[in-house]
Length: 296
Length: 305
Image (cartoon, rainbow over all chains, first blue to last red; front, side, top):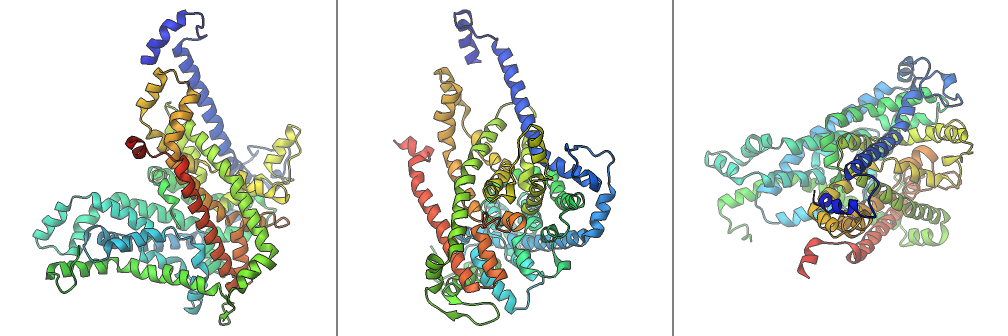
């Protein structure tokens, strides 16, 4: 408003702008939409091309000039992809890992976080700082000894190495949850204690029902990270029928690399659960991103 | 703050016990999955060892071999540093640029934000496979489009000169991930600063350099560190797309580590490789942290002076 008033006398002067400020704003917005839409197209084109390839007949995928929309949509490619590659199996394996990891984190994290946030015990602050510090340790440094331990325990080529750590709580989630519990009024705990409730009753009856936001974040991120995890399953699993979807896809890459239509169908299916998750909970996924980088 | 265990009242003692019980899972996990493995890594780095045979102590041999007799180590180091130097500026410029666009006050911006963030949620394997197909030298759509306007496209991942830049470029596609963090920083800048600057006659360019950028430096610094560490740890693209090739042009450090540890089972030597990478990341972080004093702006400091 202020700027417009200041502009007004100048408009009559010798350096009068070509357009009124409203017209300029209108033009500016139009330009912004144009640029944003163009960029959105650029971002979406690779995904669209993947979809388009997945629906083409084999002779069409190498057509020149590139054909954006196939003449007939070959949906049967998806069926063929599922029979040629054990995609169903891979997806189920991944889903199983997601479910167990989610259960593990949801069992461990609230318990640990409650201890750090509410209970007083000697060494609490030191241990909390120690926990935060462990988030800085690059994960690759632990791979070899862990592999050796699991090897000794005969757990190579089982799901144990991929689910066990979840039951001991991810420090990133613990931190998140501690911060959240600290925002809940202490009167809640005190009142319940007056009524004779013990510590665990307070945690599971009073605190936990109020913790839906952090619990949702734990669920969403565990789903997301477990589904996309590649290095760990690659190292720990050898049997083909145990592969989660990421390892399965990477494995198939070398085998049938000419059948790009089937292969893109399989790849697209592999990202579908994450895309669906994203569209349902994009607020959580986008909002929490700043902290995601902290994951070791 | 705490009296000794004996002096505690039964109630505080009980609370302390419950405290230890509740954090016990983390503490056990810390010992099993972090402390012991990290210490063991240091120990193994001084041994010759494959999982099947017992480790044999060889002192600093792994480290001297690495620095004096291992061209692959130097190649991996070169590739990784080159990649960090190439991809960091690209990510920062495109990420910040996109965030500035997303910060424009026009309707429907959330829709665009949703779109730009999609690449950041998809798995590295799927993204790698997709770009392999897009950038395929003979049959990829990118080269087909380039051919339509008369440009002979390069062989991308299959050309030693182009392979590394191709990996950096494909990661620019997912720059929406960091743009969203810049955006959060941009939206924290108090609007009255801009209004005051406008009244003083500062143009858009000047407002960006004098207000936006200085106030964004803490976030810039945070992302610089996070993305630098990420760039040091590139693995998926090397494994899925190039297998380190062609001619070791994308022989990323972590990929070398993976080959040594889990394909050749030189676990002692691979442990030494892991330790060196950790030290490099640590040193780079410390240096950046030190340099940050000269360019990162903290509001509270300014107010004191």
